[in-house]
Image (cartoon, rainbow, N blue to C red; front, top):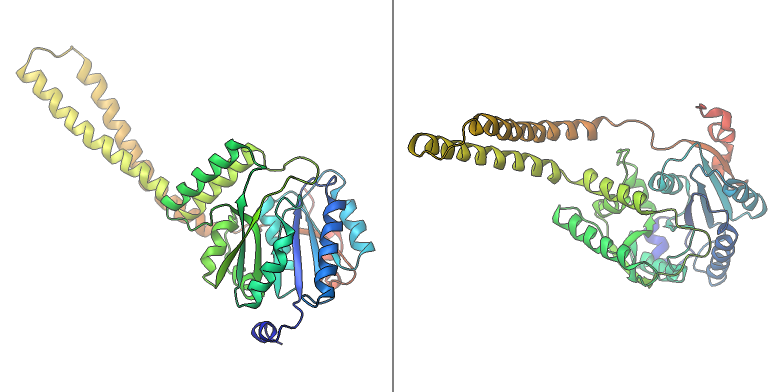
Length: 343
């Protein structure tokens, strides 16, 4: 049965939840309990099928995250554990889960469950109505600090000014249809910023709104330096405007230097106010600085294009998938850690 027929007849949806995890040993038991309770409720009312799954993706954690996930996968047939070979970053871990997960509708959510899972039924209703992408958007962020709320607002405004289509107050809590996920495979770039990639798919989208909650346990895995790194990735992956700004700045300085040159020459020949040696020292500095910035901007434009086209390293490597019910477990390349080259 295809996706359109499934939506129209309101048959149970083959559903999956992808949960990227990094050092989440404190929160995983509660996360598992709440998500399995949600799945059971959705199965009981006929919204989702009984082969719906939760996919926990361990992003190279050094604590007990993977042993906990392994145990959950062996004890609960609705859980599949995916272990990456190393820490590949939140975006890559999320993508690995999306590509491994089976299901016609897949929701991604962080392990801390600050994003309200109670809106998942609403997401599924939107999916049934024909939407391929359903964004979870934070209506209230009172649990975040004023600094984080303010910088987030400024960042989304900056992205908009640079021409990046991103949904304000949306992180990576979203539902994707199977068609959207398969289309996402065609994007080959290594430096991922899914908040910018997903809007580029162009399928039917809508949003559901919720209030952000307190973290269940543990500490945030996105301190300031990680948020800053993600922000930089978001700008540099989707916009060449910063490079063009550098080129424009170089041109402005160059033009100003030409004007300054004429002013110095006029002062030298028509007045007696010139300080000896000033022109010969300052003018070459400004002139060469302008030329260098202009050249850097032009070369940077070409380097950026080459960089984006030639990044061919794998985004992630899967060490192991645990979950007897998952067909990928029968694939030899996933069965043993030894199949992945060790550092």
